Image 1 (cartoon, one colour):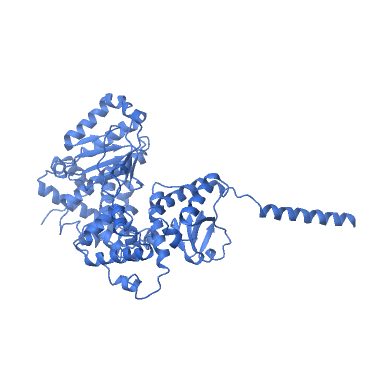
Image 2 (cartoon, rainbow, N blue to C red; image 1 turned 45 degrees about the vertical axis):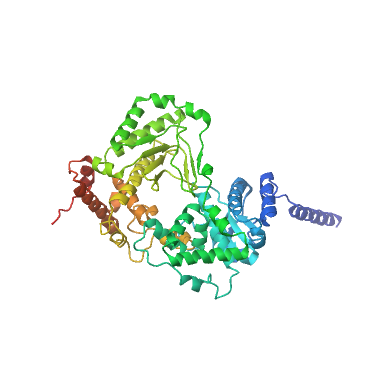
Length: 539
């Protein structure tokens, strides 16, 4: 009997000890010094408490499957919070203490229970959860080059969603029914960039997000000068914000339009890099290829550390670095690849494009996104850049990617220069080739864009999913695949009638260029183009 009592007493003691230890267990995430520091700043500066989501959170769990944050993800959590802190600081002092959420609740993922699609669902970085006075924050296990851009973009959509949740008056100009009556509708004669901005500004969330992007804000203000409905929408949102906080005045918005010039271009090279290029300078093959490109295209190839980059618009930030001898071989192989691809283009086309510079960069972060190629179309004389930090000359897939990228950027220039109203790739002559009811991603409001990829998985007519963003990228991605002689692309042409029809329009576009500029069929470029498909003779 005494043995049984002792056993029960021992078991009770063990259970009690386990309960006490569980109650007072130290959470390694919350106790991390860097995490504690940023949590204290959010509490002090913004009145927000950083919390860790629990899988059994009754309110949130009604809509989401919660994947809790693990200690191994603490560095990612700190990085995401740092991004959000940067954006929060752009708002007037004290704004979030009065009008922001009281909690930021971190999890590895909040997966909507309404998700029905295949594969991995889209996970926005932030979600407004007004019922618990919270913003839900996703901390991914791994980051992609676009993670920071998407995180910073997400917070503006979430903030305005959170603020509008309190707007219950049906007569408010921000009430959805009133707002829809102010949409800009006549967009046919606008440029692709203007169409994208106007369609985005037709939603309350989209316009609010544009206000915080200096580059797009400036362009939107210019469009508003000839679009009274857009002008009215801007005033409504800005007036709404000023009623919440008088610091949202005209001076605030004017200041937001401009990124200080000293912060627009940031070199990542160190001073010693300027001296570390002797091998590149003395390499005869590299210098021969550079000289050939410069002579044929009548431009300057800019590649040396210490060289400048194009001036950025008032709202764009560029972080960049140039190559040194440390990456001699990859630089050499890329320059030769660039020469081979640029050599194809007829002099008649090259002279019309009037390119000033080609920048060959190592790192290239443009508007918060790491990119492989970019044209600087706002300059009086166009230039473009290629960034090759991920270029691996030993991998055919890497060479093919950069081959496509080279031609992708050049096609944007040709599209802008030679495509005219009524032409084979202009306006509805191109977009009407798509499946009935299809709209490009940038035609949707920001609120609807997260579901775009899922809804259009397997969509016919596109060389790459990236081409579904906007018509200009639709054409450029197709052309890149065409010029890289991508085998899978040519196989798809046998069964995808829409993709084949678009390819025919691209070829027709080049026949117009050939005729208008008097280029002979014996030119290597047209031998390549016309060798892929038989050219239809004009009747």
